[in-house]
Image 1 (cartoon, helix red, strand yellow):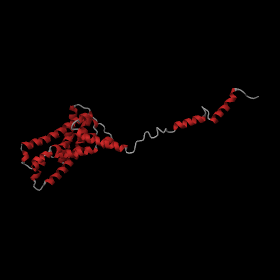
Image 2: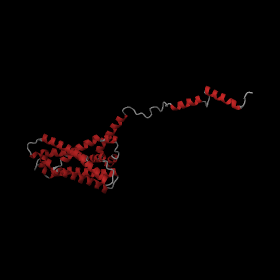
Image 3: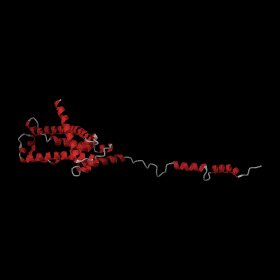
Length: 265
């Protein structure tokens, strides 16, 4: 007797469904999953970046930091706030402006030293010799201050409970030195035009009132740099004025101690 119940029709229906690919069949489901697993033409390569995009962004970042070397003289808070980003990409983008600021500020600082006002007292030195001495001494002084004073600043920030990353502390110091670099183009050309070689000779024409006024203008540029250093620490660390001043003074004192020990040894 043949089995004509409902159960007898199920296998044939399932086999027919699997063979013909009707809706709900294994073939249909397999095809659907295959389509879902394949990448969509619109989405394919969506995460890829065009060739040269990183290089373009790097150039834009460098251009922005070159502009900030001037902006720090007008709107320093915005520049120091940007220094909070201490990522590798941001640090690399501002490396060249930092180097230029350190070099020029070093020259501006050594020209303020009294010893450089007596170079022509040695008659074996001419103008070219003074230029070489000033550039060489300025680069050494700038390099030394960048590393030693920057390290001391990071230590002072950590002592007072801040986030004293050494690289960021050095970059704060470099941008704070922008007024010293500016003095090379804003004051020194005028001093050289008026007094010439007397600037490097004892008892020259620059010893009068006018020469002293211009010298104190250069000192004012140096004081401007000190004020920017305190402001930079305050802005980056989000501190009070007193706390930022304490970290800056700690850095100066620690650097003085290092120089004193080095001189004794």
